[in-house]
Length: 340
Image (cartoon, rainbow, N blue to C red):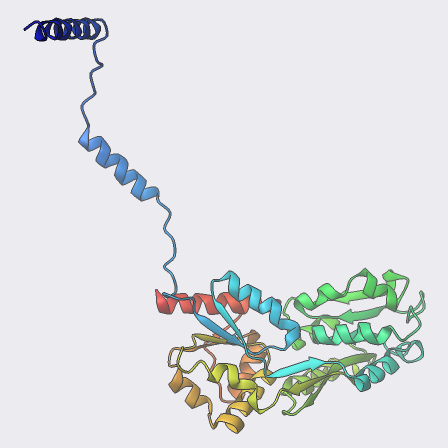
């Protein structure tokens, strides 16, 4: 008992102290939970929660593109930004050669260029080839005084025609007029150049090797002549087929699937078809059987018309074709519509 009694006294004192402490600081009453208010708040949060677009598929769709190397990095980047998996499968190569650069330099030399009133660049590669050819020539190519000289380019290709490029043509930039048509097609360039009035225009176009020359080249020259221009064609670079095995990258996707393909030019289409037929015994019907859901996208109406002429039915055509963003956006919208 002597052992338990002190503990009992300690227990009583401890409880009394706790009681006094609670009396001095009573616990705050909790507000009752308003179930209706909670439900309302949850509803409001749900209403304001952003709605994200559904993913295209469990894995990012694979999109093949057949552009030459000078366009590949830009197009691949745009596809990646859309969470698409790029598959580069080039069917042609575009580049100047020693022969084309020599020919182009001869036409751009001061003695020859003085007889022209304009130069119409139908592609980025043509502008790049001209820049290289000019390195072998005395500059500026034109005297500071004289009639207006016109330089034409398409879409984003015009970004290459900067002040550094222009002063190689003429030190007096007021003599130079750069024209970039709103519609980035060869026909649009013809319109932007205006009435030729029998003036001479230099046309740096590709020499096509290994495939048929697309009609777009001859059509461009004919339209210029119909607009009153006297055309001079010069082979500024070569567009060359990459050979029978260039479709290998696409063919190897037979088991893994292929969701889309982008064509930038009809030459790419012909190069692909030629490889499929000669190396693999395929035609376009075979492609459609292998990938029934394949979406074919064309960069602008000229490419679409060329593809259709070759028997490749096009699903989407970019209406904004001054840059590759248009065709990538069109393809992405089509794929998302099919997968959502």
